[in-house]
Length: 354
Image (cartoon, rainbow, N blue to C red):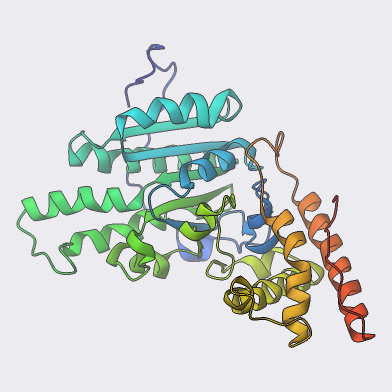
């Protein structure tokens, strides 16, 4: 708990337990309020609720740290708690000063244990960050907890478990790893006083979502965002693959109009994915399939909604603004569909604000 930024000790600290008694299940209110993140892909297609726990599954180098920093800067939460577990020492200061910046740091608590520190210190960093989030939650605040990464936390627990004589069971991970995960991840959530919305990054090699840690986290968390290397290589930021991502609380925090609009976008993205290879080799003839024709016409507008520059969001996010952009896009899609029904070829949909 000692500050590492050279600014002296923290005044008036209050001791809190690192591993408190779990909140009883029946004392957890349902998740029914959306949490704006400022990232249109998330707010429009995979919306989060206050108190939800979601995983960010990504291979190294596809933008998960930048996505987390944007969430810390712009999410409509009262305070952000960031745990950097097992990160490279070089990246810590870069993340705090450049990626997170003064805007994000002004309402954030950052807990750091780099990869060269002992395994117990890396495990403790995750516990300290979660305990800090619980403290703010108990003050009646809505907290955003960002942990990067759960995989490195599990690797630290594996070191400790194997040193203690546990058997390596699943791909070298001892049983204590899979006992620790639910105990830690279940500490996020909503209570009668406040909420902790948890975003946990999970490293996956070669997009292997069946890797033991990734597989276990998918079963515990309330959804997952899959960052695609293919999208990242195309310069598509954030590189969230909406077809392989899911928010299990989405239907509980959005209305029917929002639900219908996101469903239309998902259908069109899926149709375009099916015909993309034919387009690349020039083997698709317009008019062969009306669904494909509509998807091709709407692709630029959908990309315009889902892609977002780093400085595009200013201040705290507004969920209703993103919803309005999605509904405006749906109206243009409906007009293109009507043109197609009347026998005309659908014109390229430009999208709202184009």
